Length: 404
Image 1: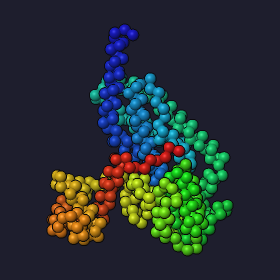
Image 2 (image 1 turned 90 degrees about the vertical axis):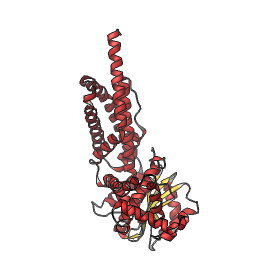
Image 3 (image 1 turned 60 degrees about the vertical axis):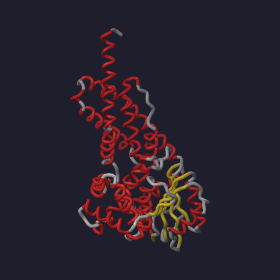
Image 4 (image 1 turned 45 degrees about the vertical axis):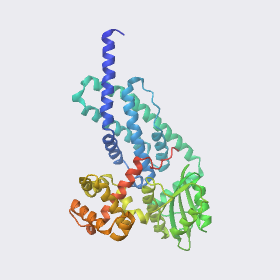
């Protein structure tokens, strides 16, 4: 290569490096924009499936990193398909999401990345940006081809699996878009049901062990290597506390449970599963043995609407930060006050301070929010819980969505 060509090559490398640095500084914005766009292509059933949503979010994050690395390395990039993308392709096949929908999501994400690259046009030569986009296309095509291959391979496995045929039957019954026909499932639907989602090694075995332990009839759908949907049915109502006691005994192994509420009949069978899915929204973010829907129903509802979650934090927590270092003190006081059932004296004992100090801090909160605590305590509790979940996620507590 002559000297002029060498300068041109170095210039192109420098442009790519600078562009990627700018895009990485906007990575959160890019991921949020792509996630919101691909969610527009989601069905209601996908939106309710916490595991699928978490997998979609992880796929977006890894795919954005894949795209930026490909831009940085140019034509020489040989990055392997992101593991989350492969796992989500298989999960999509199992969940009944069409391959055309899966590929449209990647195309939509690619278009959005292209729009953001051109948004940087004022800082780079247009020809350089066009070259970046041209070299990026083969990498996107290779990613989509690999995703399609993973999807079709999983579909072929499903066709050969009796367990998958049961799973498909259960999904149709849950959807309720056809006459109810439970033939072949060997489960009584005119009964009490308790819905669970179990995560961990041999989750399906844990579900059947639990059913035997509490003397209930099980319906178990193995969703993947480490996730199972389960229903425990019987003529008598099964309380969640009985499941908790059996779980505490340690015979189920290293598993976590998201649990609905006891419900009757076919409609109850669907509802308790829907509640377990809501509890799973929280379970995926907070590591604890059992998450019961009735304890987290408001939090789970907000987690499904990210702009609303952001609004809660901005409205009810951001004003506390205007008090400087005392913002965290006010948060701790609120948590103690709520945990004490709105009793200032009990909260003071937990914090090892006097009751008047607690009351002064609560008045500071009211002044910061310009509203009285009784009028907004539910919103504050949810906002504080969201912040705790965010902290857990940032510290790596977010439960891994299994790689299948």
